[in-house]
Length: 74
Image (cartoon, rainbow, N blue to C red; front, side):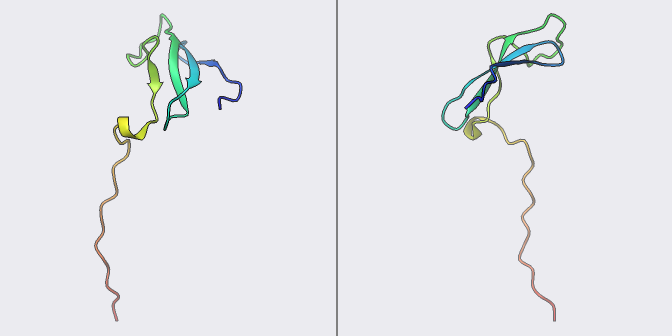
């Protein structure tokens, strides 16, 4: 599932690792090492960065407004 990728470095200097996820989330991204100069409070060592399980995350987009039925003129 991971296609050979095991880790990567972010622009802030933090190192992240890719791990097998659970049902509904094929990949889990975990901060392996936090860089000393990183100012992001979201980067905490050994905690996941992204969780794509739909049931556990808040929606990231506003839902479109519901439109009423339109009647044809004529």
